Length: 233
Image 1 (cartoon, rainbow, N blue to C red):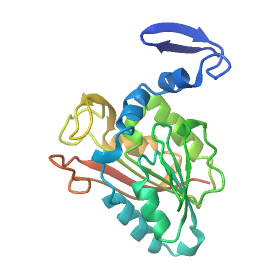
Image 2 (image 1 turned 90 degrees about the vertical axis):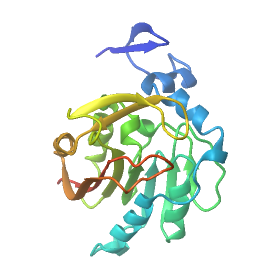
Image 3 (image 1 turned 30 degrees about the vertical axis):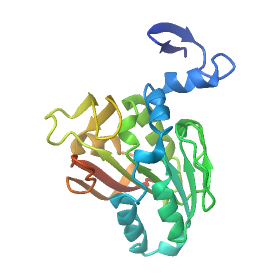
């Protein structure tokens, strides 16, 4: 099947999207229209929070509450940004690998890979952690990601937090381009809880919520979806 692609508004078709045809820097931007924004965003780290997110604390508590908590040792932080949650989870005794295409950080207490998350193999990890990653992806990219995560062993814990449509629209999903307290206007894909539940048909939902007061930052207090899921057998 041929792939339709465009770069800076110029459309073309190609049999495959890979670096043999297109340079790596252009390929990453074609796959994710946010790539250039986030690369610029993480080039200046001084404004970014360094303390762990509320979701990182919540995930650590969730893991400790599991009956088989000692089975969860290796965490993949997908879209780790500046690494603040990777640092925290590593400090809790977990072996952490952070992956992000758009940031470049030097670390000594966890492994960091600068790589497109859709190109990385997820094998060998007990936990996949994704905070504020889902809403940076197009819906088709999100479907690809969930399809890969669904192939992981049934006991794999997948924890994610993403912005929801609540208090923004009554639609089940919405593409937005609004400014946050840090950075310029940029793409976000928002989903309702009902829509996300349906997207997760290949997973067992252990816990889920849609609420505010979980990701406050400066003037923002967005409603966020939180999920803890396992792949189905």
